[in-house]
Image (cartoon, rainbow, N blue to C red; front, side, top):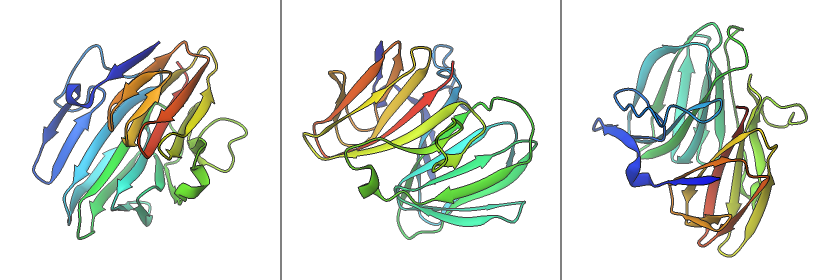
Length: 233
């Protein structure tokens, strides 16, 4: 089962400095049919104006993955961590028992991100933050694991959930496959470019909720950049 969720069907709010679209219920947007997908709870498509951002605010008991699509995001938190994550790269924050952080676009141009929240396997634990570059050339034509809590994915940024966040870039006409354990949930969004997933067409920023599929084949109709979450139920 693959359910296409068109970009224009997403909830959201435009705050001026932030234009946010929500694949799942978030903040003032509530849809009882879109409360999450397996352990995936939030997928926000955020457009952040230059020299603005999210001021300090707290989180706990959530794995928060930020995938930068355009521009860069600058992180700082009450643990003393600071870092700048550029387009194509990823940062992960395990909120654990509690963390306060800010995320700013200090760039002269607009920054666009996917912010993905995954429910951890267990509550608590010391909060952590990290980021890592993932050159697009290394995931050209194949899925590369960007963040994971699954054994064997040691090259990825660690999260505290039985889930993977994967990235893929394809040139027009290329395709790539990904296999699922039958009990798991997949959610896929093309950050850029039109694609087909098992024959179902998705435009850029559409979502695809995937269940009971042993494998998917992603075909690029245009040059494309794709993000996939594979999560436990």
